[in-house]
Length: 178
Image 1 (cartoon, rainbow, N blue to C red):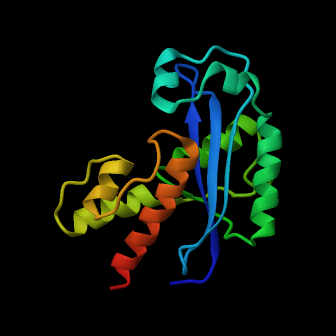
Image 2 (cartoon, one colour; image 1 turned 135 degrees about the vertical axis):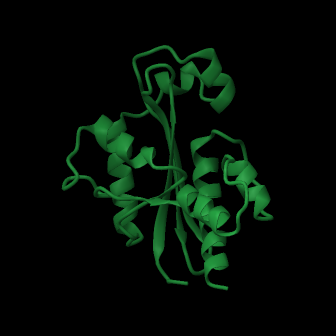
């Protein structure tokens, strides 16, 4: 497996607006599996967080009221990517998170640290299921369980989801390399 650092990224959103309220990421080395840094911040938004989202994510109104500006969080992501010389494209569970981050920041593909691509661990998992004629529909936690992994932390917490996305991606690559 390649000896390279990657950012695994996850976002949480308010509903029904779809506004980003939490950004979580881990920087991990794909070869060793070492987590080099964890990062999670709530985003300061000027809207009421729905009770459903509070219960789902654990992100409270106080968290977002005291949160950071999304641009400042993005600047931290850029700094982390440079500090650890990360591969350009982030690892995500599904395809929308990096696009949503770019769009909410109103950045072009050329200006966005991640460009216009991402590494979708969910698509790799589904492809593995297709190749083995297995049921392919499941969320991150159930997908991990199906691979013999345990979900670490709280589901729908951006940091925990980013960590588990990194873990499942490494496991899927190990399966390919057999």
